[in-house]
Image (cartoon, rainbow, N blue to C red; front, side):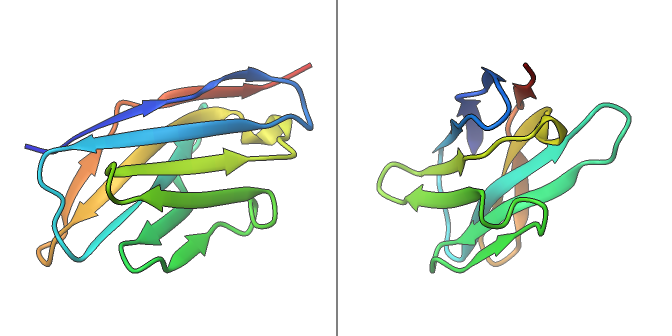
Length: 117
């Protein structure tokens, strides 16, 4: 059974940076995609960034140029480097894995990111 555990959230001032990590346990199949979604209060969950096992990436327009997704396949970990954070980036950030040719979905428990002065 695959499990995802996020870490790295917290409180940061506008313009600051945070780095989120998501470590997977269990069997990671190919192909796969790992990435990040976020959900702000009273809003729908939205895509932030995704990265395939062949290093293709996809970013939300709202974070392009500020956030960078990366992976360490040996550690089964995906990262999200968030720079130039804005109050509107405040949300619970969720890690997602789409695993194998049958595209099984797995989600982490979420980590809170709050951008406020």
